[in-house]
Image (cartoon, rainbow over all chains, first blue to last red; front, side, top):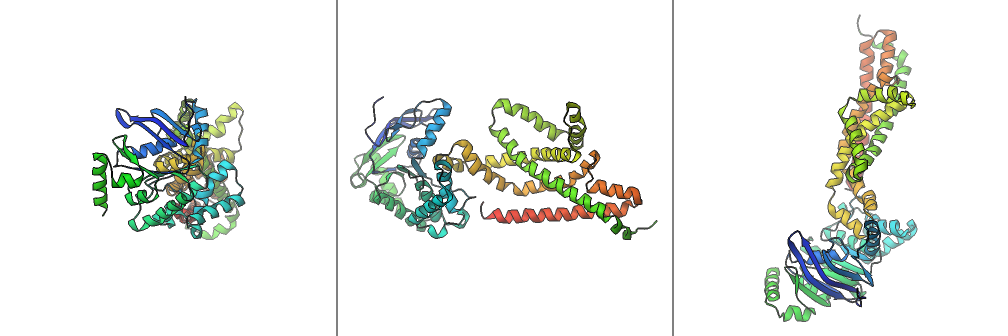
Length: 256
Length: 218
């Protein structure tokens, strides 16, 4: 096993559901502070790749390394559970459908894991909640329940919840796809703010404009492989592959 | 021999003591059935095979046999193996476990119905499966089953009359004792019925309060 040299390193990732191969030998490196976008049509494997990084969808082959630690290393079950829980504390994830805990207020959503896993006192946890919710512009709604919030507000709380664990890496799985168009911008703004703070992020998205404006690098995936990758200025303006061109044409025409 | 309700006040103290016992037993058994229901549900869904199988047998006994028989077994039967419980304790345990099994069925279904994104979100934060169940999944499942559990609790109140057969002076037995003295079955059974009705109303009121309180957090 070679030592990793990149912050996030995916080596020959392979994933099958039965006979269906959804990831075919994908390798990807992400440096600290980099923002990588993954685009592609549904079924291309982009969400599966993202969900493999924190082992929500374990790979069937290949390795994932994060900051010197192999995420999917082979361990006996109990030890593996301990290991993966530890790894996940450093990886924030934001879901398409928010997955806020409906029985907890925004404050409780944000403080639950830090209190439970890091033993924060109530006072420290409250301070943390205020700080994180302020960052996403949700301080005023700190004691609201998710059912009292709009989609965009829910997603911002969900981002604050992930940030409260002080992650090294943030994963966004189509964070704005379930939102009404007028609510997308408020979430994008929060993500841009994180980008300015040099948070390392991997973003699966359908929004080409957004990917173009925040990402250092964009990957286009199709049928379980990375077809093409490069800086957004190149990939969006001068794609070299036919499949990329076709996808972009459909997407950009479809959007406008 | 006509009806004469004016006799009631004279025996009201006995009846009221019965009411107190009925409320006490119902509340205690309800709490036991609620906590037990959650524990049983978790065992049924997540415990290893070796624990789950004997538990299934217990579940079958409580669901498949008459509550009356279960009360006899707990009160009279257990004495033979050295467990001599006071009648009211035996009553609470019998009623509590019997309804715990029914509550467990409801809670199991509700746990399975919680969106799997909830477990994923909790695991993503670094919680173990057990922690995620405890803090995220089970509280939501429990909120979802408050209305049907409320129905079970009304049934529990009515079935609490059965503990009269092991000698607990709850409302029904108190009424019978008064009737034994006065030969006025109609008056005192009606009075007992009225009290059951009032307790019932109170329980529905509490249930509505709880439902209203949790409605925003679902």
